[in-house]
Image 1 (cartoon, rainbow over the protein chains, first blue to last red):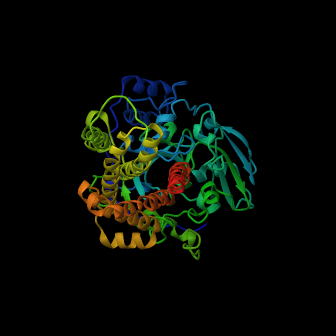
Image 2 (image 1 turned 45 degrees about the horizontal axis):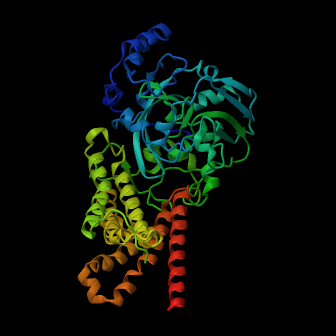
Image 3 (image 1 turned 180 degrees about the vertical axis):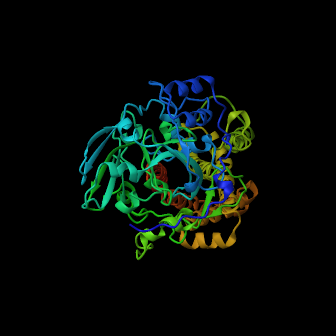
Length: 331
Length: 206
């Protein structure tokens, strides 16, 4: 594996930042739910405080204790995160519809629990695992990442998750596992968008094994201190912060270790526009628009766009993965 | 032409009504922009303004084209009276669309605009359509109509190629789902077909 250099971290970045950021205040009920659930005592107060009162987006069926987590400043950017509203009302999640507002408006009846994930392919411990099985041995971390959509907008999101590599290692992939393929749930009853064939459902994404094992790659279950709302890919999604957002597949039901590069959904739909790698790259334009700049959501209407950074600003951490690879050809 | 009974509207009244309808989208945009009454343009307001202005321009253009068939099918002259307002509405929203793009999306960064235009043919196609509408908008007065006579008809037939460019512009920038551009293209084909059929029919009867 390549060795990674970590960016220098200013003391101000290690200091926890205040949690307001547009999320509504805590309700007493939710604090209590958190206490009753009882996880690591030191984390409790923090996670409970982080719980906003509006729970409409959460599964109404079974009340789930709020997540306990630890902030990981080492892997967090210092930019101010976007609000809950900005993150959860403007989404590309074609399973719920094509409009940016469809996911938040049409995901109310989606059931993220109970949930299980099939582990398949080139690994010793394949089989079906419940969401709880997958999460149990790990501590949740909060990481504030930049998120750059291929459509030239971006935001900053405080995700909750586990380094994917820690989870994958438990399944003991063998030496033939060169790639990891991820699949979203196929269920047109819950995903109305799957009734129209704009994409060859189910949605499939993939990573090279070294990308999947990179410490930045996060198996994500929450944001802003809460479990993922349905429109954001509940209950389990991928976050690969140096790649365009469409690589960060949502509502994962299958993880397969494979020897050959998987056929991924957007790449199949428009191969000249969306590559397998899809690393954020200001120097390689989308055929129909420039990728040199991006609109940071939540800024003022007349605010200028900001420059897009190579690998979305994570070049120090990930550029080594692609040494010798022609990034124009493998976009 | 068929004579119909029904409520009597003056041409002026019809035009004022059409103008009122034309102001609905811009009013909604303003309300959402200033977040009045719980309305909002969402987290990406400039993109939302870009899309809604473009869509309104397209809708108004299609309505402009539909007025003659509607008049012939229903026998109501009022449809023709709306046509000028509909055409000018399309022109106004298309102009707004360009301004939103240049000012809000590009932030008036002209070097960017040059690069974008050079690389992205759908922008050129849209721009040609808008420029093509200019002489029509400029000659939309009664006076210009009288002065130009037959030439006016020929100039304003340019609306058909402009509509083709407009739907092409829309089709080309859609990410994946081309259903909507195809619906616009199909209705345009129907309107064009109707128009060609009518011209041929009329020639024969002369």
